[in-house]
Image 1 (tube, rainbow, N blue to C red):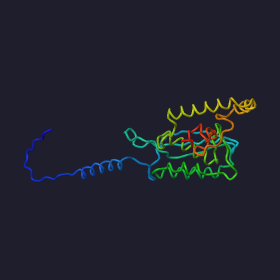
Image 2 (image 1 turned 60 degrees about the vertical axis):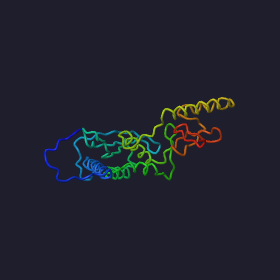
Image 3 (image 1 turned 90 degrees about the vertical axis):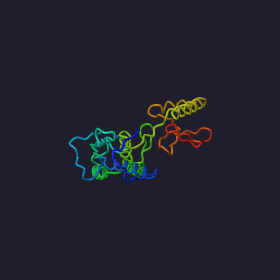
Image 4 (image 1 turned 180 degrees about the vertical axis):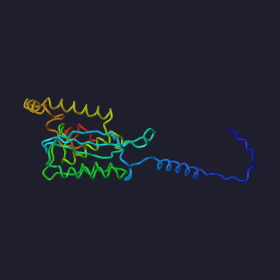
Length: 240
C-alpha cells in the first residue's frame, strides 16, 4: 500500500531483520511483564474458586478432605489463568493434625510466593513412610500419606492447566486393551485352579492378581508377556 509523504525526508534508518526480531521479542516480553501474576503482596480477593478432594487411606481411620482455592489472574482476557492460592486439609482424625497444619501453611506460602509451584508435586510424591506404603483401590502404590496429598495437588494442577495431562491417547489405550485381551486368553488356557484365583481377585482389582508393580506409574498392573513386563495402566514396556 502506497503512502503519500507531505513533508521532506530529513533522514532515514534501515532496520535489519535482527533488529526487527529483537523489537518483536521485546514487545512480547513487555506484554508478558504487564500480565497479572501471583506475588507476596497480592491481596486476597473476597471470592476464590476451589475444589475439594476426598482421600481415604489405611493410614488414617477417617478420610482427609483436601481443599485447594485458586485465584483467577488476568480475568476476562485471553491470558486468564487459575493459580493455586491456598490449601486446607480437614479430617476428624486428630493424630496427624500438627504436621498437616504445618504442611498446608508451607504449601500455601509457596503458592502465594508466585512463580512455578508445580515442583512441589514431585517433592511430595517422593516422600516415603518408614513404616511402609499401601495400595490404593485399583492397584496404585502410595509410599506415604504425604505422597497422597501430593497426588491430589497434581490432579488439581492438571485440572486447571498448570501441569500437562499425560493421559494415554486412543492408540495407546487400544494397544493396552489388545495386550490385556491376549494375556487373559493365555491365562484362560491354564489349569482349572486359575479360575479360583480369578474369582478371588475380581471383587476389587482392576488388573490381574499376579501383576507386578510398574516402575513408571507405581500401579500393580505390569504383566509378563513375551519375556518382558508390560504395564496395563501406563503402557510402559521393555519390549520396545
